[in-house]
Each structure stands twice: as C-alpha cells, then as structure tokens.
Length: 452
Image (cartoon, rainbow, N blue to C red):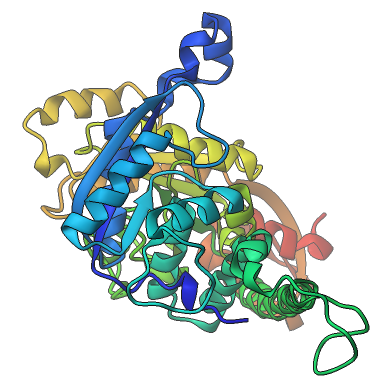
C-alpha cells in the first residue's frame, strides 16, 4: 500500500475549528454528567491546536471557524464553509487543511475531493490539497519524537490502526474485481480486500513485536524492583514540565523542549534526593504527556509506555500553573488515569512554572489547601525542598512493618533492609539474623519467605 498520502510534509496550512453548540440542548443534569464545565472552548482548543501544528513543523496561513449544532455527516462543516476553504486554499496557495477534530473516513474523502474539485486517489501529488485531522497530526508528532524501537513500534501500530478504516478512501480507485490468483490476490479478491488483509497482518505483526518489547521491559522492571526502591512516575499534560523536573532532580539529560510531546519514550533513573529519609533513593520515571480528546484506540497503542504509570508506586502530577486553563488540563489527565485504573494511587501534585505567574501567592495558597501539593519553579529551583517533603509523606505510606529470620547465607537481604529501610532492632541468633524494620512494600514482598 502506498502510504505517501498520509505524510504531513507541507509547510503552509489552513486551520479549521468548529464550535459544538449541541450542549445548548442538554439539561443541567446532563451537563453535570458530561462534566461539561471541563470541556475546552473553541478558542482554548484552537490555541492548543496551533501549538500542535507548530510542533509538527507546519505554518498556519489562515483560519476558519464555524458554530454548528451538529457536524455534517459528509463534510463535518457546512457546505458554504467548504467553498470558503477551497477559495482560501487557492488564494493562499495552501495544500494542507488541518481540522481540529477526528474526521470519519467518509468525511476525509469527501472534503479532499471537494477541495480539489475532483476525486483524489492515494498517489502522492504535491499540488493536491490534503486534509489532516487532529489524530493524524498528533501521530505525525509522535513519529517525529519516537527515538527508541519500542516507541517507533507503538507509533507504527497507532498509525496502522488509524489507517485501517480509511482504506476505502485510499484505494477507491482500485475498486475492481480481480480475476485470478495473480500476485497477492486470491481468486475473485478485490484490491481493497487484499490491502485490508495485508494491513491486518501488519497490525498483528506489530502487536507481536510490541509484546516482545514489553516482555523485555517487564524484565527491566523486575530488575529495578529487586533493588527494593519505590517507583515514582512523572505524569501530566503535555509540556507541563515533567522532563524539566526530571532533569532538575537528576542529570538524566532528557529532552526538555518547549513543545508538545517532546518526550515519547519513558526514561527511568535511580535518584538520590536530599531530604528523603524514608526512601533516600527512588526510581524516577518520565512519561509521555497527556492531551485532551486523545482517541481511545490511540491510547491503547501506547499501552507499553503507559504501563510505567500503571506499575508505579507514587504518581507525581506535574501541572503547568502558568497555563490559563490548567484546571481543564488537570481534569483531562485525571480522566485518563481513572480510565487506566490508576485513580487510587498516591499522588503528589506539583504546580510548576510559578516563575511565569504575576500572582504566585494565589497558586501557592491553592497548593497549601491540598494534601501533598506544592508550587515550584524548575527554572528558578523554587519549592524543590517542599516537593521532596511532600514526596516523603507519600512514600512513607508505602512502608510496611516486617520481622524476619534471615539465614547468614542470605546476608545480602539483611544489607538491603539496612539500605532502604528503617531498622528497629537486630539480633544475631545461632543460624540466622532476626531483624525488625519498616521497609518499602516491594522489599516486603521480596522477603516474604523469611517473615515470622
């Protein structure tokens, strides 16, 4: 299958946004159920979309917006707006139209045909007007930032999953009946059927490769667990400052740019934080940023990366306090965490970038009213000691009381307890060491056979 049609390789584009007015028909109770107060407004969503477009390497030459009660099933926008965009593309010489929405295969096909004034097939044509929806744009950014094999496999799986229902659009010009067993086609098999089969095989192969990488990552996780150190995962909205915080606390050298999705591949470092008493050392993991309205199938494609969040002992939710809509970003992150089954994990909230605020006192008071919440500036290294204290409080909740009889032949286990735990007493008996201590949950599980 030719995949050039999906490439986002042109600089200039037109951004299209639609304000959904359907909520006006909802009752207040229905709005509460939908958590409507946390929905992005048109301008808020477009502001984020402009950042995505810039990160993808495109330049916005024009914008068109429309208010609709319901999206048009064929064109998403109204037919009059389709004509306006066609004219704008001609005047501005733009060959890419980006929609702040996830379009159906039918809508993509109809819009491209309308903008070009003729049916468009999948053969790459530099002069043809391409339509890119929000999901495709995010996938392009992911593809640019995936550096490891695991990340690249996950991006490829997400891309193939996105393309699968759009094969009808891509191969519409090949809708003809095959007459035999020539090449890849079976008896009477259409080209579209061949391509669907090939894509299914490709997706199956990618899932197998990701499963293999996941197994290797699980071995790494078990190795880290054997150290008896708690795992702390940095989570948050994209560009909230997670990688910057990791770099501030360590010398990991993780990419920390002022762009969306700068980090796609998780990075884990063993960190010794001054001030931590319960756990002087922790395993600190940076993870991919979240974003509002991320399609479920896209999240599923990155399950290997998100497992780092699922298996963490404590989550550090990094929030860009300088963003005017940080509350909505928090809601988006917490929604994804809830869907992942991580709602019950211990969380430290970190309000970052307070150096960019005129009213620092306001956000500091906000943090003070919440349990295990701090206001910091990684840039100016403000509030880091408060962060360590809050992390210490959450980590202390992971400690368990144990009493063990450990044979002298297993002295490394005694050494581990001294390294990561709080020892209350030690007695040396004839054949073993009796030790009572508070240790991390992971160490407690490791010492199960020695407990009395």
